[in-house]
Every structure is written in structure tokens, then in C-alpha cells.
Amino acid sequence: MNPAAERVRSPLGLIPGQATPRLYDTIVQALRVGHYSRRTEEAYIHWIGRVIRFHQRRHPRQLAESDVNHFLTHLAVQEHVAASTQNQALSAILFLYEHVLKQPLDRIEGVVRARRPKRLPVVLTVDEVSRVLAHLRGDKWLIAMLLYGAGLRLLEALRLRVKDLDSERREITVREGKGDKDRLTMLPQAVIGPLQQHLQRVRAIHQKDLGDGYDIRTVQELLGHKDVRTTMIYTHVLNRGGRGVRSPADRLIRPPDER
Image (tube, rainbow, N blue to C red):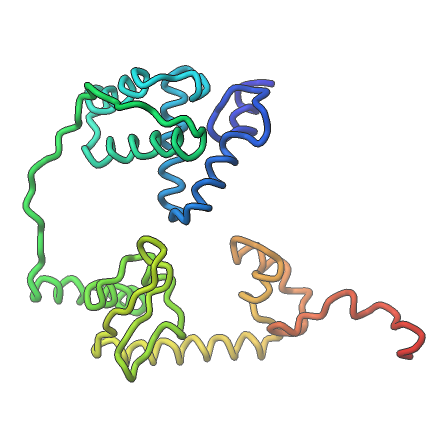
């Protein structure tokens, strides 16, 4: 098998002919059993792949603590990564050996540590925040207001649903937040009106879609498309909306006792 084909077959670029399940699949399974976030999953897979390629694609079981030391020192000395980046790489490697290979490493000593720059945190004044928000409109303004006024992380704001908002109690329920935990936070009074207007616009668009004979998001879900643009290719053949998309099984001849 040529190298290009092997990289496609094995995302971590491991040696051909490895036993199933592949190391990649085992890593992903261990991460998801541990309820790690998708971003952590992507980061860990990236660093595990990096250390394997750094050591000429040797299997991790063939590496020792000194090899890990060499890789981490390379990151600090040759690549000049930040301390947080080096720590993330170390966490990914330790996860691999402890939770996937069940072969915990001994103490890794003598690593040249990346320098952690000493910087004071930057905190914007209320006036500065107002000037930034003045340049935003629509959905972007709403998201920025939730980040600033409710302390949401970006993905938490993007994942909000109507059921998560309680305008009477002025509360937001954040589901599956950091650490896969739910929490309550404040719903700023300043966004309640704009949020309601946003929901009204969305409902109007939804009703219009249903009156054109299809619900594009439902069809996207039913067809399993990741990109709605792919779904749009199929919409010209649909003539019923929402969950009412007719299954081809409904066109079959009914059993004799139902005729």
C-alpha cells in the first residue's frame, strides 16, 4: 500500500497491518467513554499522532519515557510552543498510555519546560465592551451579549435551545457544559426582548418553509446530511413538509385484511 493510501486508512499514520481494533478507534472509544469534549478529543488525537510521527511511526508500545521526554523537549526548544501547548501534549500522551494502552509511564523527568509568559489579564471596561458590541448586529450581537452578560462559552451559546431559556426566572440552563455538567446562569434583561424577536423571526421562516412544502432542517436530519447544502439538492422532489415526509413504504400494497 502506498503511503498516501495508508494515511487515509489510518488517521494516526500508524504502521500497516496492525491488529484490530485500530489504535485510533480505541483512543476515540476511551475518550468518549470518559465523556471528554469533542475539542479535547481532536486535540489528543492530534498530539498522539504527532509523537508517533516524530518517532518515525513507531508504535507507542515501543516507546519509552526517554522518547516522550525527547518529544516534549523538542516542542519547547525547536518549536517554541507555549507552556499550555506543551502541557496539553503531555496530557494526551499520558492519557494514551494510562487509559488506552493500559501501560502507565514512569515519571518523566528532565523535560525542558516551555516558558510561561507572565502577563496581566486584559479586562475591558464597560465603555469598551459597549463600543465593541456597537459594531455587531443580529445573531452575532445576541451571542456576544450572552457571552458577556451570562458568562457563556462560545459553544454553550451556540448550542442554546428555547427550552434552556426561562425569561420569567431570568435563568439560562447550560446543558453539557465544561466537564459535561449542567449549570444555571443569569439571563440578562437586556437580551430578553431581542431574543423573543429573534425567535419570532425564526418561527416565521419555519412556517414559510412549511408553506413551500418542506422543512429543510428536518429533511437534513432524516437524510443524515452534515451540510444543509447537500440536502437542498434533494428538496425539489419533496412535496410534504416537516415530519410528514412520506416514506416509500407507505406506497406498498396493504395486507389483504386491511383492503
